Length: 305
Image (cartoon, rainbow, N blue to C red; front, top):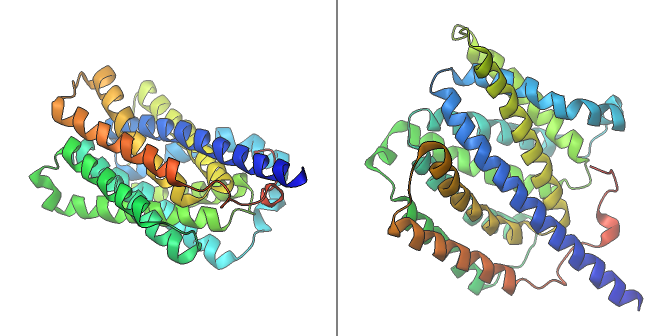
């Protein structure tokens, strides 16, 4: 009976992790669209600074709840630093790329993230990935390429920003999984502080006045991004990274919806076909995952975040 209860609890953890990842991806899609709108008029550094201030609107009460000193009691400080560095590079490189490239092109680079994560999870986290799921991940990425039709601008320098940013994003997610005993608040707070410092440096000589709606947009960007980070960080503590990674493909679906709502972009048949391939590949990977290969319930820190 105890064994059955443990398996059921583990299954519930995985389902919760999947739901949190899906919601986090939706918020990240909103973040991407808002970020592209803002960096079209303001320097990346300025956006990072105000975005970080907005993030602390969410993080402030959480830091007070767990105690400020808890931020300094972390495991494996070296890996924590690398994770913060990768997360900061991810944000800065994304905004640098999207300032010059169409959002669809940049999203194409970031859709390669699940491939990186699957490989890294196999080698660094010991998560077993069968050949069928490897094939499904590759087919899903092929669907992304079909749907987004990368432009010739992908050969430019900004495209390298997108490629490097997607790799940094994947590495930060894998490290979040590895450092799962660290509270979500601590993980997200340090990467927000790093983004703030980076933004201050990059904004020197590039700061410019803005209207109230612009300041509000940058603050809201921080709130949305922080909520997305918290949800995804928590999801990686509840379910294997190799299972959650393909769910990043839902960003494409949200990009289609948001593109239609805010930019009046209507998806054509090629995008719909590509999106269908991505969804099918993601569902197949979820189906193939053995629910018994999960972390025990007691391994999840009950920090309430």
